[in-house]
Length: 285
DNA sequence: TACCAGGTAAAAA
DNA sequence: TTTTTACATGGT
Image (cartoon, rainbow, N blue to C red; front, side, top):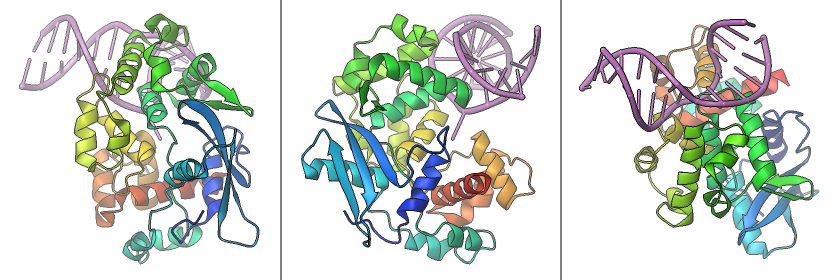
């Protein structure tokens, strides 16, 4: 599989690993839990030695075209970084960042349904608390393949009971939001695949119309689920901190300051924020 | 022990 | 129409 250059696969893996607990989940190879025709599969991506190409295998074996399509989506194969570099390369801070992080692309989740459920899970509570709820949910409804948990699909959670989600630690409201959402995906009222090609604003208005989806969640989905290059969660605590540290006075910036400081990088404001976060994370690990 | 953490819907004012 | 309030868990 060929990925639009510039691309640095090992660097991208290091950034992904900085988000995991141990930091050792994807050393040299990338494992993707996914579903093909509802059946859980694990995709493994590794660099071919002595070549720019990446090699993908699946377990159990699947049609190569389907496997490649998932991997291309997850790794954002078609994203061109060069225009972003040309826009931001001369900036006093970003010049150095782009040198350090050349070839880094954001990764996207194989399942937008999983992303949506995680977004609802992470509302208001800490990431640590959300992680605990998510683990219990996956252990209860997901599938274990080759030692990797594959998140349940919409069909599975559409059939879940509010009470069962409550035993995973979800509040009454969140349990209802998740089941309602799963049912809308399951019966076709909401087409998650269609969101992939809709404009940012249309995705936002579609999601906010759903129960349990406010502005924060819709934006977070655009940023983390679709990795839209110009989207930034400007009121997000982590973004406000990192923007303040790199571009502001060192203290946590306000949402308005985040928008002002990132404005020069449109239409790559999201990429700019992603590079700031990645740089900070790699510096720590 | 409190209090906060990558919010939102629904009730109250 | 604008402003409170309840919600659940895990870390400090």
